[in-house]
Image (cartoon, rainbow, N blue to C red; front, side, top):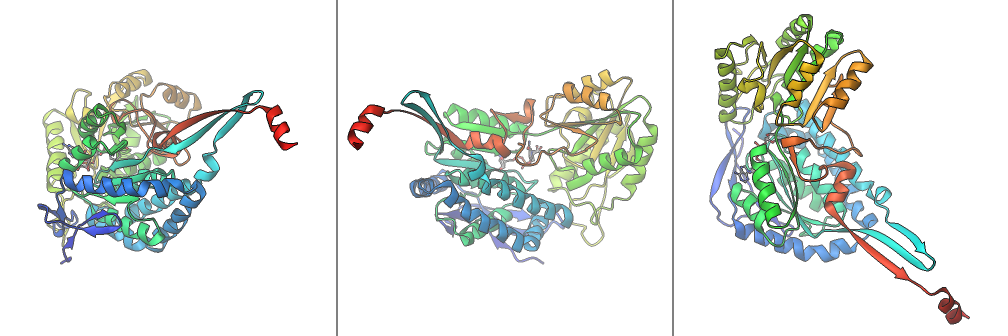
Length: 485
Ligand code: NAD
């Protein structure tokens, strides 16, 4: 039995808890209560904003080269504590050790990009006419906020925190109330790395905290990652309060499989994409559109799925409610006439009967009007739709409200290019099931998968976390000569 952890807010460099109402944090691995989380209010957000505001002048007054020093140290602390951080992600999120470790490694890579900022963020200066110079400098915004989801407790907070802070902002973070522990540990390691008090703050809780962040006049910019439903709420509320906002939402990623695709590579990529992190990735394959004759690839996918063992190489889904929702989608598809080739319903893991597991599920003969073809399921489930032509497959992909990722599997460069140009998605893969752009490239979808200008990571994030100061100077060269002589 794991000892229950008391989750605390982190304000001005100190952990605190003020008798707020609380909720239990449950480990999805076995259903046990692992922590107790405070449901903070506007006043708690206000306190965090005040601390961040107070820390801003000194932090933003340092040079970029000085600020990145903290993150060299922090990155090495992530490496030093990799095993412990990996186990923490596993405990609160339920993913496998390998998946959780990959998250921590990605967080380290995100810090590597942040410490490279002095090489990238070089200000501009030009003599626009004799004696007249225009100069552009990137300046931080002030206090900024980051609101994160449950599915990557360690990595998604690192999409925003290192870049925003290295660029001179101070931050209030609101982690998912379902997985608050990784963020708490992040605060401890940042302090150990030498980050001054007040530069990074955490306020725990639910929607009240999010609403307070969107409303608080002291916060200049809000970044959000989560479902499309909440992304819309946050984007509308934050921008109506005149804040800068980028809000990443949900996904329904389509993989287009052509008959000439390499069968082994395609089957293993598609199955890994739909089942990795138990399908709880905004980059997970959710619909496979098979063009013409692809039965040989489907047969291999079924074989491949048999090697996936819940509780061993497949983690849990996040809550009992998520398990119910995913199984309801499978039930409905079956009732609607689809054929369940691999069925992950009613899965239990011996010794972890209280955990929330869904086995890999492959559903064939899905039609584009079914809920499993249109809605985000967020579980280890793939729906197969059959198309006669590549254009029909592209039309199916284009019709989705979402547009995070899309991929094509083919050995023809011409066909791949055809899909690359026509897919309605922000991130496109060719023979890659999870086409995540790595730094310095940026991460972000299209359509209802993202609201706001620019992306959340990479070079694009520099625009989001800074504002340009334009200075024009005029000198009289002759005056200078007179003074000098
Ligand atoms: P969620 O939208 O339920 O929660 C995200 C955050 O919003 C949490 O911090 C939560 O406390 C808060 N929140 C929840 N309901 C709210 C409300 N009514 N008003 C204000 N705030 C509210 O998302 P989740 O279930 O934690 O995460 C899974 C979702 O995130 C999936 O849809 C997934 O596709 C998406 N996601 C997207 C990306 C991306 O890059 N596009 C990345 C990761 C996850």
